[in-house]
Length: 269
Image (cartoon, rainbow, N blue to C red):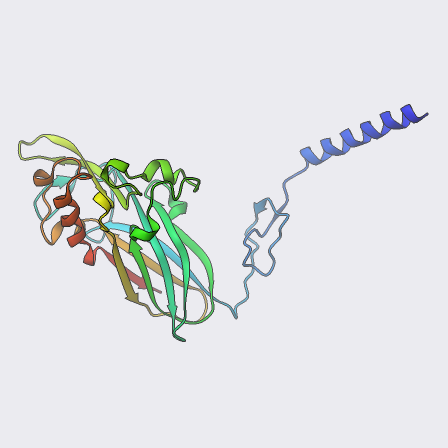
């Protein structure tokens, strides 16, 4: 008798598991900041509702060349040195992203962001709940020295460690940016370039920014825009002078840093 009950119990468990595995995925709101967030939902059905009394902000990171959308893998751009060049890859780090409020308080939104032109999801931060009206935003391109050591981000997502590690022989830590493409040299030959910036020999080649912003009641949108041509324009940066790779060139790293002042702009609506 006991053996029969055991067989029945096992069959019941098996049938229950089969029904569960074959059931339709649960749909609902998957945004944890929504008032109707469903922790059991497996597919977001677009039903999220938000408390209108809460202040929220979205941040999009956009990239341009001379205020125009980038056409990747297209040899059509020209800088102040009259280098004809293309963009194939753009990876960069934004660290210490901080919102500042009218009550003089501030909050760090992210210690660092890994932004990739081939990953649109990396370029958006949505539904950030904030405690007060924003007055300004600040961030750093790259890492400050205290936050940039070899293996510090060994287990971070998106393969960050492997993609952005800066060689120990050049000082260790992590890249600030990988900007890659091709250019036409003085002999009319198309060559590959690697504009990789980072902490060469322990030097802090990062750059910090602060922008005043206008924020209105309700959900607001911020755009943090990068204009790539400004890496090369003032002072003039010539790919022919600095070669195809600049990781080990203190002169080239300094030239890029000297150009960083106006690379970013911030707008809101």
